[in-house]
Structures are given as C-alpha cells and as structure tokens.
Length: 104
Length: 142
Image: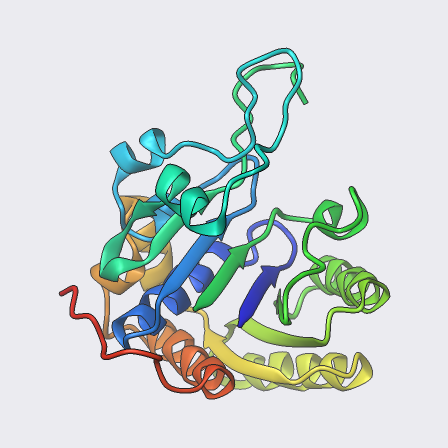
C-alpha cells in the first residue's frame, strides 16, 4: 500500500508523514518513508538525527554534469544502497537534495 | 510493505515528468481552513484525478479550539464534500508541534501525549484499516 502526502508548503506534510510512518512501523508493518522534497527534512523530522539527515545518500545522482536516477537495481539493492534505518525501524529514503546552485 | 511518500510542496510532482506521484494508491492532501491552502489543494486533487490516482482523501490540520474550530470544521467539511474526498483525521492546533519543530525533534519523541499526536495516530489507524495485518510477526525495535 502506497500513501502519498501532498499539500502547500508549511501545511504539516512532513510531521504527518513522520508520525504515520513510525506508528505503522511500531505495529509491525515494514515501512519505507521517502522524502521527495528537494529541500528535504523528513529524515530529521522523523527523529533520525541531524547527522543522519546529512549522511543519507539521495537516489538522484547529481555528482556529475547531468543528474540521473540510477537504473538496473532491484528494489532490495536499491534499499540496501540508499536506505537508512530510522526510528522504530522505518527505512528512510531520500529522492533528491539540491546541492549545487544552478544544477537543477 | 507500506510506503509513505512525503511530497514536495506544491504541484510539480503531479504535473512534471509524467507525475512522479502517480504510483500511489491513496493521496492524502493536507489542508487548513485558509484560502491559499485550499486553492493548492483544489489544484492537487484535479491533477491527482487526471493522473488516475485511485483515491484522494484529506487530513485537516491546525483546527482551532472553540467556536473558531467549528468554523474550520464546517469550511473543511464543505471543501471535502465538494471535492469527493473523505477527511480521515482532524488534527488540532497544538503548540507541541511548534515546540518539536523548534527543537528539531519528532513530536512523537518530544510530546507523545499531545492532542495533535493522538489525532495523527488515529489517522494511522484509519490507514492501517486499508493495509491489513502485518505479514509477519511484529519486529520489536523499541
């Protein structure tokens, strides 16, 4: 089951995502929480800590002149490569992080 | 397996690159009783329907206390009815959320008993009804 949380900036998307993800994980569901914001804060907001928020590797590769999403990985390889274990066992993923000015 | 996708503010994920959000089973649109927020929500619902997202529902946030709250509920109920989506949770305005944000903590750690947390947990209950029981024995992680 895939849930998307949308709405205008500052409306409470991330807090709601974080509490829902952790609550479902506490009840024994395997949960993946993915931050799709280019100015991400779900990893910090879910309580994984500021270090984790800096350390998590975005799926969108922006290290070269052209940004790309890696292909050819199975879902489990994807989770092993990019996933970070957060509070209550939620697996955290980060879609992208705007890191270089003018790279968008 | 449950996937929770916290989307970027605004509409780009619905309108750009073929709609990166089109693969969700249920889109939750967070709303307050505020004109510009409802305008974004209106556009979000329209795009979600164009993308063929099977279900759209709402989470009503920052509901004020007292009579002002009655006003908020009436306005948001009318909005949800007009847009064919159910309101799955009413989250009250709650200083615990502001304080958790200020500290950079999850409100679940900072103020687990806060009314807003209870409301979001009730949202998780509603969502859990759509998932069914966990496939395997619960893994205790603390």
